Image 1 (cartoon, helix red, strand yellow):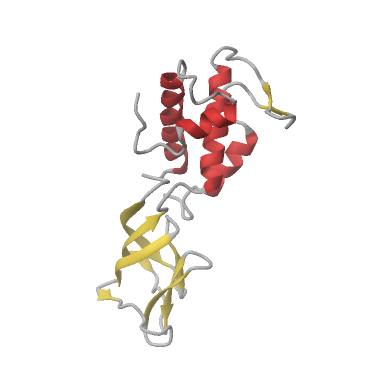
Image 2 (tube, rainbow, N blue to C red):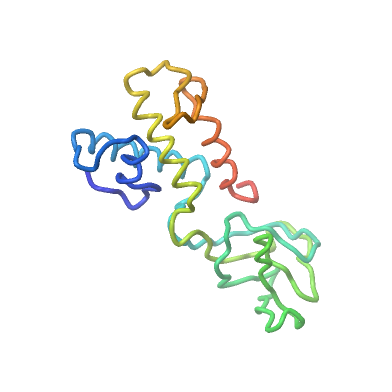
Length: 194
């Protein structure tokens, strides 16, 4: 089984984590299947189309009467179109003139010398957001999840697992992901409810 474009970790990283030599290939197919399955689980849980590429979004928001608006997906790469009601808002040339600008610190859009006038779905934003490659914490968490699933396949009701290299143990209900993985999933959910 080949790697899938949605995969958030690699077979080599999973084998390294599990202590399986690269020359041992007996379980490669099951590991690759678990990688793709865990990656799809992450995309479903984070409600994202991808965590390893930049995607385009076209969304409508209610005007909030403020100068700042949080978009659903981040990090924001660029905005192709921003309109409030019937008015298209240009990019601010210098953060002083009227227009929009990105607040990279908060992953929000700011209107310079104006506000997102209140209204029902009156703000239209077409933008791109995402990651050029899988963030390190996501790759590590997916690798851990694959490792847990690989070991769990023989003991499905197990509720604890000894971590490699004297790292202690982790506990969970058999149908849950380990808590340290769940914490990372929560970080990557959209900023604004869908």
